Length: 161
Image (cartoon, rainbow, N blue to C red; front, side, top):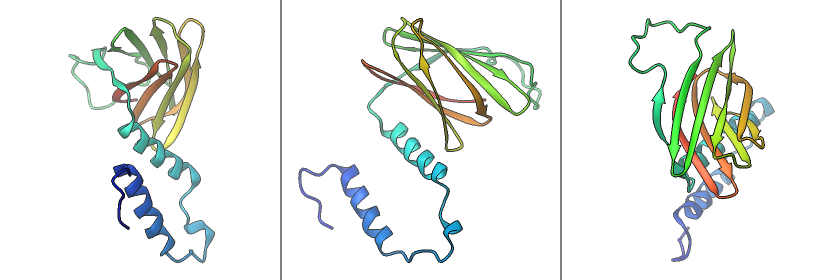
C-alpha cells in the first residue's frame, strides 16, 4: 500500500492492519476468536495512548512516603489528587474483597464522563451536577483513566488499584 501525502500515520497503519487481517484464514473454531471485551479494551488503550488530551499531574498520593509491607490491606482508603489546567480531580479508591470502588470529584464541576480501563475492561460513570462520580466493581490492576468533558479530555496518569 502506498500512502498519500494527506493520509495520517494512523490511517496508514489501520489500512495495513486491515490488509494483513484479510490474508489470515478464518479459524475453524469460533472460540479461537478473542473475546469482544479484549478487542474493545485494546482499541480503548490505543485511543488512550494517542488521544489529544491534557495530561493531569499527580500532586498527591496518600500512599507515597509510606513504607509498603508487600501485601495490600483491603481496608485502606487511598486518595489521589490530579491537576490539569484549571481542573482538580480528587480520586478515592476504596478496596473491597475482590474489586474496588473509585469515586471522587472534578472541580470546578462540569458535565462529563469518568472512564477507567483495567485489564481491557472499561468502567465508566457520568459526572453529576456537582462534578462527582462513583465507579463500582472496578477490577484490581493498573488503571488507565480519563475524563471526557465538553471542553476536551483530561488524561490521568496510570495508577494501581
